[in-house]
Image (cartoon, rainbow, N blue to C red):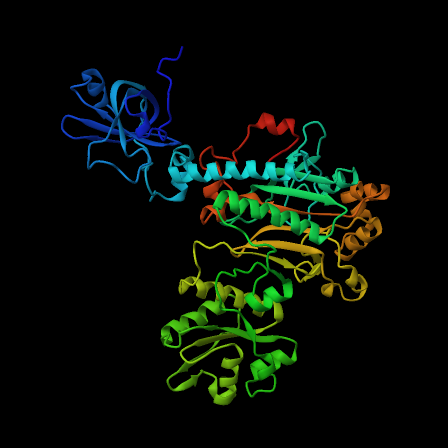
Length: 588
């Protein structure tokens, strides 16, 4: 038998229909208030809080022991449920209509003073919270996030089971096939000098499952990437991995939209309208300056290159003649920005890599611009009107190569949306971005690299360009974007050995290297690989956005810092010399 009374109810369960019942609650002391005779405590567990009253007239022993209670003591308390006196009901507490009048108290464990308050918003720094993560996780906000994550897990399992998918576990120790982020390597003790890699994704395995005839595969899986981190990245993360055989893009987008529709309805109470809007990569870049556009607010981009290609401003004219662009957007009602504010915007834009920023203000005196003498008022007026400006508006323009200028404008657009508070916080917008380039040229590596990954199929209409102009080949790839964050991405895969070898060759992987790194996949294609495709969802990012958090660290139980360190258990850590010798490793 336990040394304490087992709970009869959780701390968030009791309501007026329990009046008169004898109950036992187990949990942590949230707050304690001594009102000069009567002691009140809120007892807390992950289900909620209940106020407990210790009255010396009812039970002197329990009241005497209650004087010792402090925040985070673990206790068991038994008593009778009573209605709160009139005027003392707490509408902010789900159990706020009742009290438990204590008759017995057991202190199960005493606690030191926590390094930060558990109740309410925490002002402590993130490093302190991560060091004491087990305390941080007692906070209601994080507990709600993990509960939401759990519910999403169950919904995903049920949805895919309802749609004929089978869950298959793929290996965590695999062959290193670096392409993109760095692999995490695991040395083999048995095979001296050889290493396993932790999977960046189960990409090759799920394709092999399609070859094996498992035509509908799904897995909620851990993935590992040794890359620079940020708010929505961690060295280990979770994704919903999906692959299907005998399908095209419409089949993948249809199953994805079905999942999102159920997710929105059951977890957020939102009726998601289908089909979701779509933009090509080119449309997304030229309208929003991003391949993962946030469409919750305006400030859409417009080109004015056709107006300035023969203008007197040599910078604009030369850029357009060399194939570059001049484009920008309207900031409604901001013509009154001060010179200091505008100079700050110019400096910010330069910090993004732009040569400069041109602004046009339409004030009571007409259009005004620092380079007015080169362009003239008539042309300035046409430029403002071309991007949709009107009296009282500010227009911001950037010039440069297509990719660089639109990317800078996209970042500037997001910054203006943030500064002017144009982004609605409680809105969720989804869209597809399609027709990505298959490859892009890396100046650093002096070769073409895959935009998604080397197993992505080229658009059949562009196959002839693989040999003549690879940069113009469109991929059969698609990304799902929510509120400016990519939450899922996938593609129709290459299933033909010859085309896959051709793709490897295009990105600088020769026949011998391809055989060494991906021979198992190429060999599998020799035995009847079906057409197939899939998608992978960033599970942590989904939870982050749907719960309104700013960082995936707030929706993971035990995350790492931006430097990939676990402050709580001090991982990564040194290991002793004996372990290194067993692995045939020496630290230099």
